[in-house]
Length: 92
Image 1 (cartoon, rainbow, N blue to C red):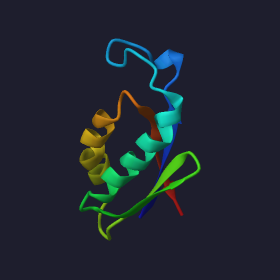
Image 2: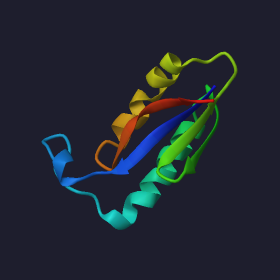
Image 3: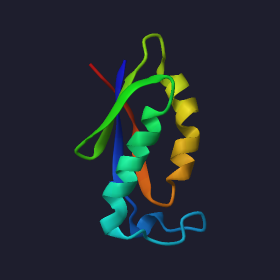
Image 4: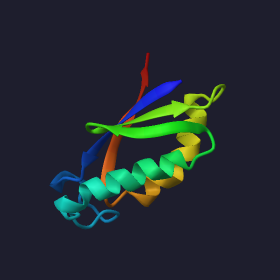
């Protein structure tokens, strides 16, 4: 299975107690690259790469979206103050 995970920079609307400041815009690409690298470390991910403002994720045969969601929770938490995701979308 192949999925797209949308990515975006943090905006003023995202500023709250758990994300108290805007990260430096020039660091966004670095965070996105590190985010993709972390997905590539997951055993259930065959490959993950950046395509525009999305992460394209190819899963190992037999793995489903729920397993991906569970396996990626800690990655999402690690990057919460650097970037936002817009949800998984199944690709044909």
